[in-house]
Length: 325
Image: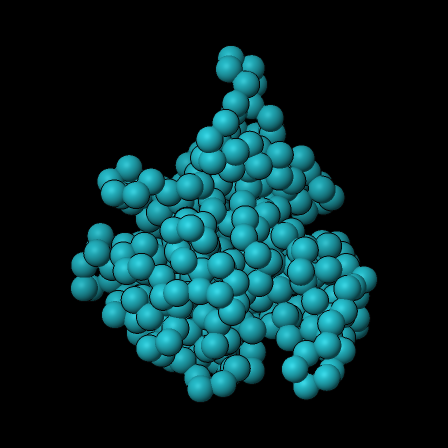
């Protein structure tokens, strides 16, 4: 089994989680008509189990709304469970050997031409707007010369802070961008630094962590309120947290919670995703939303669109993603 087949096997076995009383795994889904607008919102380090608990309690109404219009599925990370390599995977559809991003501290600048932003801009032309709003400039910024994603900067409208941006500031920028430009074709990449930082400080089971996720859902509602009806919406996380620990001391001697082995991420979309998978499947899903033929890329993507079931069982029926209610 080569690497691509292995990743497909992982995708088949990954679990989907859906809202109660709504089952997507066994339905025949229609591939959505291509869109010209996508809002991608990333909640950094948002533990899957905590999201399920809060959704079941009715405390994330806006994420639930997105999922009710499409679906929400579990995905796994395929690299180290930290911000830099996970985001490199999300925005390219490639792993560390292709992106050169192995860890938050071990990385090179990502090769030009691999990102969703660059490829959408090349496909649609200069009238296509690309917005990049990163809450962690040291890990996800595009504008600094030392950034992993510096190559992306050439095609983006950006607002990159000098230090970590508070989620309220990130949300405010996002809402203003959408109010002014959402009538135009484009790709909005909105990255919140939370609830990752709160998780490090208090732990993924803390009230503070849950409260921050609820705050992010409020900002999602603000963004949805100004999105046009033809806007595709995708909300996801890059990694989870080590449930119940372990803990580590940072360079300041402070005891922090960690996510050394926390691959359980998730993706929600207002279009019907039909299976779980890996973060490698995010970029192919985006390209399908925009109607971009990935077979034209000189380097094949390592994942597959989440709008498609996968099968490795010959003439047998494909294994569906399991529902986690």
